[in-house]
Image (tube, rainbow, N blue to C red; front, top):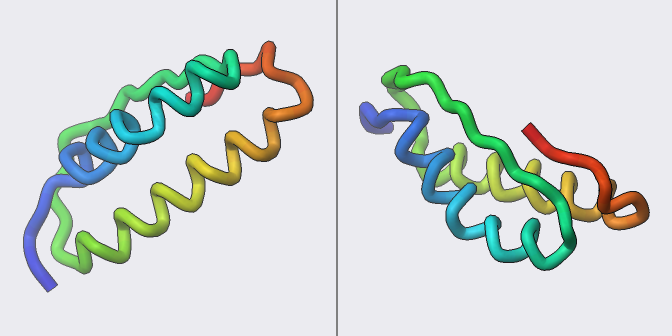
Length: 68
């Protein structure tokens, strides 16, 4: 476990997923509070990536939606 900023982890994942959202015609809005956590940054990275991937799959049928 380590101390890390959620914003750093979430922002990196949003940057990595942005091209996929753009290609699918789905807006991705990231407004992330600056909060520090003591935990597993790698696990949080996996969780955020999974949530973004799920959002892409769920909105694939209706690309007019945005994800916040």
